[in-house]
Image 1 (cartoon, each protein chain N blue to C red):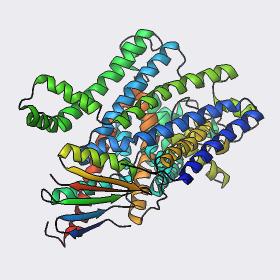
Image 2 (image 1 turned 45 degrees about the vertical axis):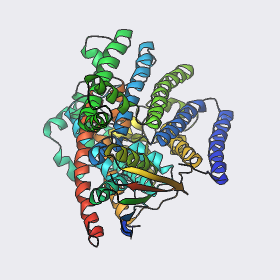
Image 3 (image 1 turned 180 degrees about the vertical axis):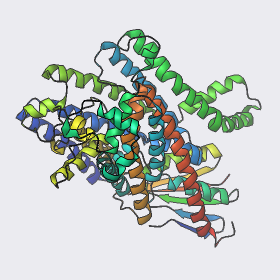
Image 4 (image 1 turned 90 degrees about the vertical axis):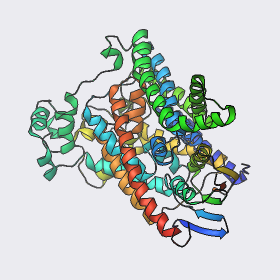
Length: 476
Length: 83
């Protein structure tokens, strides 16, 4: 397909890159601490370019399998997870990893299910909606807005919702020694977190096997081989067996007249290499994700900090720091928490006291988005995707239709709720955790696959109705 | 813009899903192809970049042939011959 890229596209792409360069140089001139934020920015830019180039969308992965039988993205995601697992294992073995595993229990799978339905309705996952915003897609922008507002409101719901809190959660939450400013007895999510989630085991596959995560055997044999490679390979085999084998066998039989056991290996390999574009993006994403952990940890050591909250305080921006003086600073790729933060910051400015909950007040804070490292990452991700889309002639402003706007708002809301229940989305809740040998990541992933299946069932019914109406005039 | 399906000429149909995001373009394409007979042509017009790979992979897998692919100003036009 021949594509002629207009000159104005190239100029816009150059303009976006120049904007980020000016921000970087200007802030560095103001203080070297800004390097910390710049690291987030440029990794975000790389993620955006990779995601757009590879059409990397977690929603597409299992939705397209169930909806149209296309395994391309599911395969790409698994390849990227394995590659990220490899770089993570290396970083873990050096002891420089910023990764922290999440509590593991059924809540991760339930949250994944809600998130999975939401991402199919919305037409993209949390990271997919960000990169599609960079393509000028108005529906994706609405999804991002919906995820942001829902999360920010959901983490602060109390009042009548307190009646839905099991007594055991309320009792357990009260024993956690949280300060009075958090008021843990008021808020459904607060009591869910402190009274249930925090009581669940936090572990990694290496530890389950009796190894240390920061040892070479624990990082490579425990977390990478057993915790990442094995489940990813099982999923790939499932995809091959259910969606690829039949058509591949048909092709081979037509060509050679016979299908041997060795052809299964060739068929499996052809599935892996089917989409060069997705695989290349997966390779770069995997390497960049691991490298970001390494760089952020290095910068923390250089500046003698454990969290960006200290850097912001030293720079004089102490508004919105949590009660512990911290802000959200994962040290790796994350999407949804910073989306909740910018709306949280806005709501606070409009007079809503949302610092009396665990999510904002105790852990993540609501710093000014202009100085929030994770927000720099997300804005740059949109920019990176825009540059890539512009250079391939794929950038196009698209206003959402009424139908798609409704799906975007509903889907975004479900993803927002799922993200907060799991403490992460398809990136922070699945991709990063699964690649680091955290079982809660795979539980979220299983839930997400189930949610995608339910969402596709619904969309099949919905589109069938519409197609029947459109085709009624034809004898088909 | 709403989804549009119309007959251009005998054995040649147009499916316009411009403005739709994933998964709509690929699902509508799949459903439209299922209704057509072998040898008939479906022209799909869409502007969601990621659907281009999904539709290509779907056709490759199902044996339907994409005889022409074009993209201009962010709008893709695929001509697909039903197997």
